[in-house]
Image (cartoon, rainbow, N blue to C red):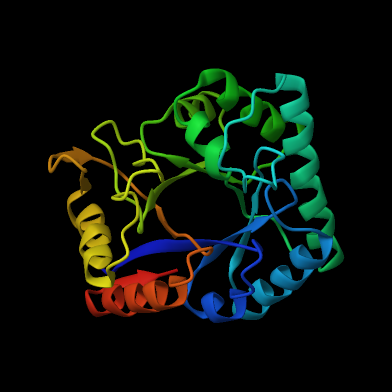
Length: 245
């Protein structure tokens, strides 16, 4: 039986490369005002996703355009809750106007990384999902704090792994401040992803292999080389009998 995976990309973040990426991905995460994006970009990208049959997700973050949502912000849980909820609601309103449905939610940057290990941050995201009564998928790292909380609260999840990022031994992502954080060689990226699919293990930065599960794989859309990486990855995975769907 042919293996099927989801391939996602973060979009609406200011590069304007969405038209190039959409033919090669099966879901997208649209920035909804926290770290990037506004109603206009959400509308434009949503229409592109509709044209290409790509599933649409909300990509909320800490409200921090200055640092592109990649810096942890110490803010009250109530304020963070309100910000995340409003970001998702803004995208939902855009989708309703375009007669489209929300498929998933995927936190961005520092919010995503913290939710993987910090129960307080993870709980805020879970409460937003419950408040909005979103019966959509939550994209989460395997064996993470937010994954466990989502399962406990009966929120449907999809385990996510990163095609273009290296992992620490504890399955956290190598910090972007480290020169080895990003995988920029296309063949290395294909091997990285194929190993995770075929063996359910990932080679960490220390050279060890750790168990991992992934239903969806992300290639960051804000990478200037994202088009070449995603198109090459899709072609190579298809050649190995893996369908992007």
